[in-house]
Image: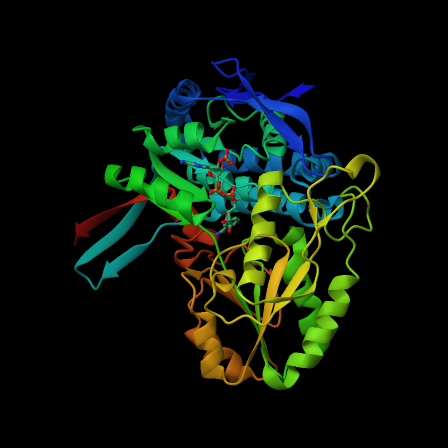
Length: 480
Ligand code: NDP
C-alpha cells in the first residue's frame, strides 16, 4: 500500500513517530494508502528548514521566484490527468470535475502568482513638494498554510502560491482526509528544483499538526481555510500571539431568483451551484429563494432536473455526483436531512444514501436532496450542511428576501438572478457577503479579492491582497 511522506527540507521523509493513518477512497469505503501521523516534532523540523531557507528565498530576484512557480505550474499541466484521477480517488469527486476544475485551477494559481511575483509593486505618495513617502513590503517570514478537503489541491495552491511569490517560506498542512495530491505536488516541487526548505508539507491530524502550526512561535502568519469552529480555535491560539491571520470559513449561501430572471440559465446554473462537488463547495448556494410568482414553475423544473442527475462511480465520465468525502461526513449530512423532517420540511426528492454495486458498493454516496416547506430561521436554514442538500423558499418582495438572505451568521457568497440591472445593483449592495454573483456562479477573475464577512471569515485572498497579506509594510518618509 502506498505510503505518503512528509516533505521537509527538500526531501520526502517519514514522520518522526513512524506512525501512519489510514487514507480512505470514499467511493469504495476502503483504505487505499497511508499518511504520516505527524506531530509537533515534524512541525518543528519543517519550521527550522523554512527558517533556514528564508534568507535566500526572500532575497532571490523576483524573476527567479517566479520561474520556480511557473515551472511547478507547467508540471501540474503536464500531469493533469494523473492528478485529476488522484484527486477523484482521494476526495470522491467525479474525475471529470477534477479534470475541468480542480487541477487546471491549481495550475492557474501557480501561474497567476508566478506572474504576480514580477508585477508586484508597493506604493509611493508624494506630499506636494514637502516629502516623498514610500512603502517597503517585506515578506513576513515563515507562513503556516492550512487547507480543507473539499477542493484539495486547488485550495492548497491558492495559499502556497502567493506566500512563495511574496518571498515567504512555508509550512503547509493539507487535510488528513485528502493528502494525496499535496504529496504528488511535493514531488513536482522536487522535480522543479525548488530550493530545499522553501516549502514543507506536513501530513496528519488537525488537532496535532494544525494546532502545532498555529502555536509555533516562529510561524508568524497563518492562512487557513476550513470550518468556522476550527477557525475560532486557530484564532484563539494565534491571535494572542499577534500572528497575522487570514481565515476563510464556512458559508450558508443564498441563491436569489427573481421572477424576471432568464429562467433557463437560472435553473441550470442553480443545479450546478447546488450539487457540484456533491454540494461540498463553500460557495454552493444551499438556500434557494424564489419570487412567489415563479416559485411553482421553478420548483417543478428544479426537482425534475435534480432527479435526472447521476450519482455514480467518480471515474465514470457520466457521473454528476460522486461520493461524499467520508462516512462521518455522510452521516452528518444525513442527520441534517432528519433534522429538516423534524422541523417540518418536505423532501421533494432525495434524502437517502445511495447503494451502488460493484467496486463502489460500500461508498459514501447520497442522493441530491431538495427540501421545501421550511422557514428561513430554522436550523436547517441556518447551519452549514456542506452536502448535496438544498432548501427552496418563496418570497414576495425585495426587502423580504434581503432579510432572509442576511439572516444567518455567515456571509460568504450570494447569487442573484434578475434581468433588471438596477435591482441587481440595489440588492447586491445590501447583501452581507464577500462575493455576489449576478446571473452566474463560480466565475472568478483571480485578480479580484475573495473572502467572507461575519462568521465566514476575516481577511481576503486573491489578487494583490494575498501578496500583501504575506508581506509586512514599512513606510519611509523622506522630507524634501
Ligand atoms: P476543518 O475546519 O475541519 O479543517 C480544515 C483544516 O484545518 C484541515 O486541514 C484540518 O485538518 C485542520 N484542522 C483541524 N483542526 C485544527 C486545529 N485545531 N488547528 C489547526 N488546524 C486544524 O474543515 P473541513 O476540512 O471539514 O472543510 C470544510 C469546511 O471548510 C466547510 O465549513 C467549508 O465551508 C469551509 N471552506 C471554506 C472555504 C472558503 O473559502 N471560505 C473554501 C472551502 C471550504 P484535518 O482535516 O486533518 O482535521
